[in-house]
Length: 272
Ligand code: SF4
Image (cartoon, rainbow, N blue to C red; front, top):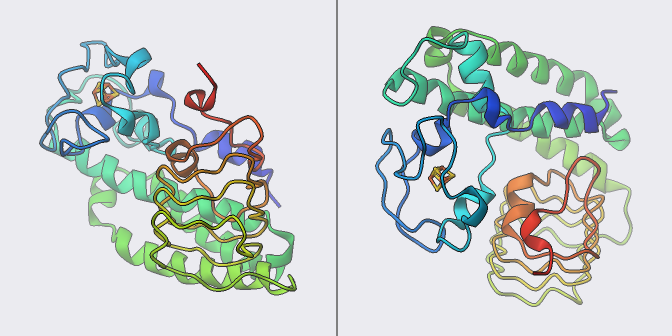
């Protein structure tokens, strides 16, 4: 069984080994998350020649909270250092780089979930299948640009998604009583403080602005749940399933919020 904390540390963005790809490749729409419109493949005006952000310390105050939430799961440095072998390229003007980064981003997110699945003792009967899926994805992350371009990430996502669903069912099956299945539910702004959520499925649920203060989310499946502005102050997420840094950073927590090993409280949760 892999050490999840170590494995997750490897799936962390290392901007010093990247080239600001997340500030160039994706499109932004002016919104509460981004102060400007930006087409895909065009560098953000705040990106400096050294590929650092010129407003990094003030992103939220300057209208770019979406940048503090984005997580590439380490896909940026993998694209620059492995797919394209390091230097000697115009990183901000090469569509092949953007395409590879997009695929790597999906693959790295899958690695995050599959790594967690491998660390769940209750899912042990599925571990050989999960390990094989993880190996397949890991091998593809080491491929060159041509192989990545030919890959079908949607197919991989579908296969891994079905497997992760089985893992979730198995991991939660022993909990009695357990919360309801609220997969993909519209829970925007809902007051969930008194709902039984332990071992529930909130996979893909829309929890924007939901009140989860003090909630017990042990073994609650949060894969793909939208937690933007969800209030998780004092909530116990330490045993939540498939939680990501992006979800944590998008939520509103405090010092009393408990997180799984390998995830930290984001800086903007600290009182000012
Ligand atoms: S504001 Fe900074 S972090 Fe956000 S896209 Fe622009 S350069 Fe990147």
